[in-house]
Image (cartoon, rainbow, N blue to C red; front, side):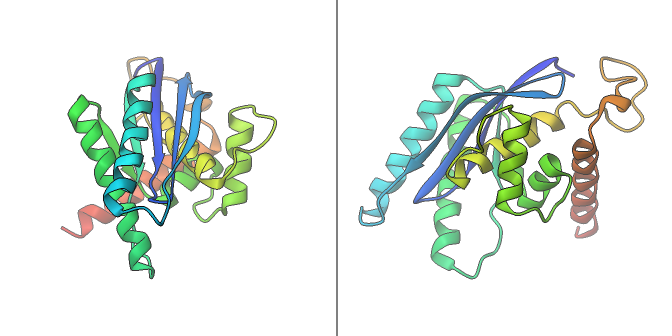
Length: 200
């Protein structure tokens, strides 16, 4: 397990796309960068996608993350909204693949469980925990910024969670240092993995 990891998190959206970068050292996250990329609903779709793509790629190239984490697309009643999220997700996946950077897809429930210990936390609770974890004076605004940072923190923590059954290596004996939120993340990850296995 690496002692330090830099993760770029993306909260995908066509109108607002949150991008957050954190360094995680011994399970302690530190803010590196956060921004919200925007496109105008009146612009042609191809120009909107190009605008967001350039912003995402610029952030990746500027901050050189070890890993990228992206919120997984999930079903919504608003087809237009979910299509925009899917289109932006494709842009991020391509950018990661082109640069050879590993990328993970995390569900909103997994991210909430990671940073708050509660998979049904609301945006205010997520923002407040992001503020505390990053030792900020105020929660990042808008919510897209806080969500992107939460995604990055969740992925950074996942890289630092001692795996079940590990008896040697840098992570051995570290279980007592795992926070309740990290234990909740491990449980959410295990449940998600079991669910995927059961559907095969």
